[in-house]
Amino acid sequence: MQKIRRVGLMALLLFGVLLIPSVSAFAQIDLTGVWDPNLTDEDAPERLAGPSLVEFVGLPINDQARVWGLSYKPSRLSLPEHQCQVHVVEYIHRGPWAMRMWEERDPVTFKLVAIHEFISNYEQSRTIWMDGRPHPSEYAPHTFMGYSTGEWEGNMLTVTTTHVKQGWHRRENIPASDEVTIVEHYVRHG
Image (cartoon, rainbow, N blue to C red; front, side, top):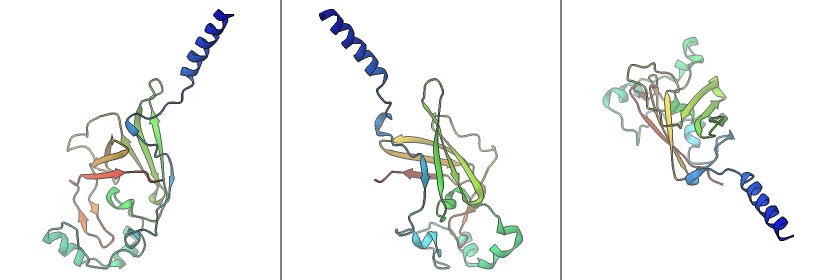
């Protein structure tokens, strides 16, 4: 009877080890799901009506960017060539639209390879590579969403994006260079 209990206990322990759910290492969090913007927070002026025209406070811009911003005309968006102009990565997250995120894992090791984003406005997709690969050479093509890599810093995901087409930082058309490097931090609250 004692031997049966030991075998049963051993089988239970082995079976139990196999059923322990996997958890992310180093306090990584799961960002998968559909995310809607919180339009009641301090970003409401950016996300809805937009900042006041020629309000450049807090933006590190040069004289050329200031002239570009001062010459902005909102009616520009009514021109056919601008009506479907895609937002660049440094601006698109400020819009009032939903974003879906999901993980891509290695089918054998289950290590996180990438986090994917899909933003409903302009149907923009972005891959955040999580497997340690380097950014491409400076001559690689630039896209609206750029080339992104990410790493976990505790429970915060830090994303670095390069290779972004020339775009803008804010609605009043403060220009951004195609040599911009964007660093984002994702933290899940609640």
